[in-house]
Image 1 (cartoon, rainbow, N blue to C red):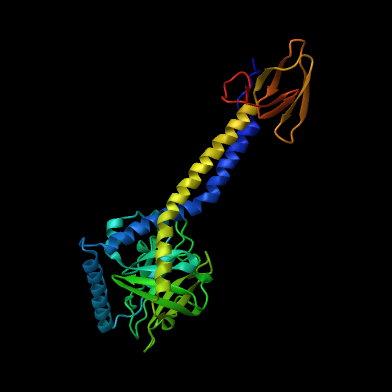
Image 2 (tube, rainbow, N blue to C red):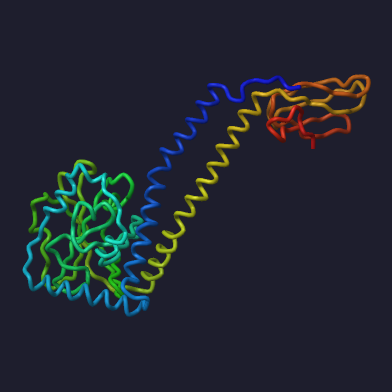
Length: 352
């Protein structure tokens, strides 16, 4: 019978805990962002089908609604307001908010896609500290994202939110990169033409430019300091078949991403259990029992490169030895076997 020891020693437990903690630390930001992305995809689907099951009519109605809102805005002379965004940046309570998909869907006016940095976000009609936790917001006092010369929506989002990427990677955008807005049944493409860093009080830098169809993406900078605002401005360009194909691929990948993380999580669980079992097996002794030619030597090697042991069969050709659990290659006269522990509570090796 095998010599019984504790299934796991202190070092084994520490090793497993370290493996688990490391996996959680590495995976958390990716899994969390994938979860938020999945929630946003569901939110965008609600937006597209809101108020009716007839999709084409719904999408056209959504676009007409936003166009009307933009016309009202143009006539109102409303001034740009950075105060809501500035307050949200400095609000220490921002991590204590609760998601309400029904309200978020009601506030959604567009979808923003930035393939270069993997962004696919809802755009909300106004800016508030609550809305900024879940997507991008149209800056109060700027145009609505419906295109048109002289129009310049300012779309703002956070950087550094613990459970979502949002605009964290916005500084990676370069001149010539494209981003897209989907408003009802209209898809608008914009090409980056300018990047600029301003003070939070510089409202002049956000004003519309007569004769130009622009959209500006805004976030705080430097990262985690938030003393300035980064502006990435794009000009309207034709929406092409290549753009459509890119959009479709990004949407497909965003739907697939949570399932990839599920697969990765299952693979890690298997690896964790496998390592734990190997550690437990290695702490027990098991009986190696076999029959070969009388008085003949056999060699036993742990794996392909482990230490080699030599045992001599007795006059009846019996080998009966105790070895630590593991996988062994057994070789002798007319003999080539693998010895392994099939079940943790077995008392002897299985031979195959």
